[in-house]
Image 1 (tube, one colour):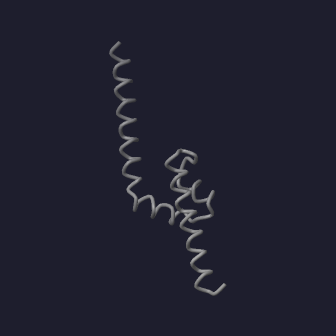
Image 2: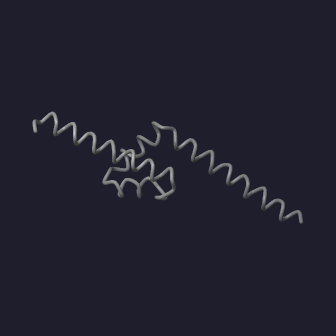
Image 3: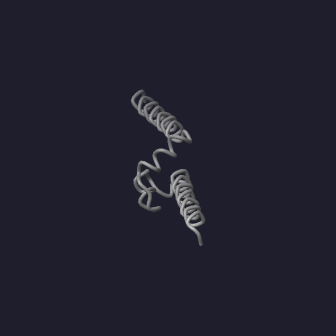
Length: 81
């Protein structure tokens, strides 16, 4: 195997690891970027870069804001009772 093929295989393996880490995060199999990075032997920076590139952090933020708002509304409703 020549050096080009070897490098290509390494890049393919890295890309597969990144995709697996992202899928684990999206499915909830892992709880955070650190865990996803460790599970796939990647750096946190690499995983965060792809999370940001895909805009996942924006969706997670919106989902978290919605959850916080629902919890706040439930607490307010319980106080009124």
